[in-house]
Image (tube, rainbow, N blue to C red; front, side, top):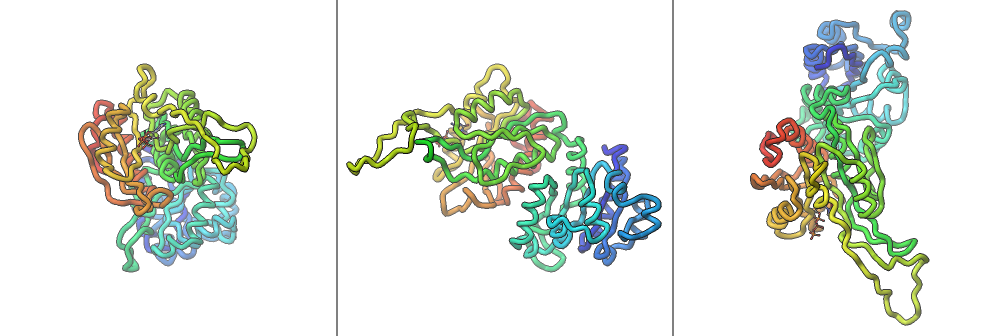
Length: 410
Ligand code: CTP
């Protein structure tokens, strides 16, 4: 429920603007008040009259409307809400947001607000995939702007792909999460992510190709369902998401210590690509060639298995412990063996052979393995894999008895 919550809803131009009417209706059904703002481009798709009628409130339009200023200034308008939602958000408005422009009422409100902002992008697939748009999205993510969608599917322009605005109910779920009302409200989820680095000397280390993208996507998805997320991350290429407790670490041993310090948790997800060994004879100064042509002899010791350690805890074992298995061959068999060996509840297995482009890429094709069996998911963007997994985590925590069985509707 969203009883008593006030949503400032900015509707920009795009065919999906008609869905904003349904969104307003769904929000009001849940007890929220909606203050609508329609951009000039938005007016080409829905009329201010229909928006105002469905919202039961005045529809704000122009920046320099003296009547509005007398009633409520744009600064006040931007602050009076619990949350600012942009749905649909066009590529143009997203670009103006990223640039910090304030050249109409919508962009001015977005620049002036001190509230959280949720954006539901809607645009042609090529426009969404264009590096300029992706750059703008990354900038806004860095500013802690949240996103819901876009979904993948047939588009009004006849093309297929990501760009379609998220469905109104998906947007409502994201709003509930951001106003602290999601299904994981009050739950603590611990995530490990990224590679670890194991030093050799002060300037060299052993690491792996993990970008941290899947772990960061998971953190965002769980945060968006209302969870308090502790994100223990090695030195990853992917920036850590906003709105989560980030604990940066370097080595596997640091990661274990950070995980232990973050417990207890309701669920723990181990997405990190942890180095299996660390060097025991780390040199205090930069190793030099000694002229003999012989390489230095590095000595190794095994790193602690963080996942197995947490899964084996007697006290403070999270109700749900999820591991990842990055394999290059016999994915399902290796992953199923890992589930047993590590004592976790689920394993999310993926094939990271270079030909798949998964490690360091934007997509993932996973198999979810539990005591109940294996379930193959289609190849999906890492964000979508994260959303599906987060939904499963929420369902499992609702019914702890089912934690061993994936089931559900992903
Ligand atoms: N993991 C961990 N601590 C380690 C090694 C792995 O927490 N020291 C976790 C990973 O985060 C992942 C799972 O265990 O969730 C499996 O990691 P993976 O590297 O695939 O397995 P390993 O145990 O290293 O097995 P192997 O290298 O033999 O495949």
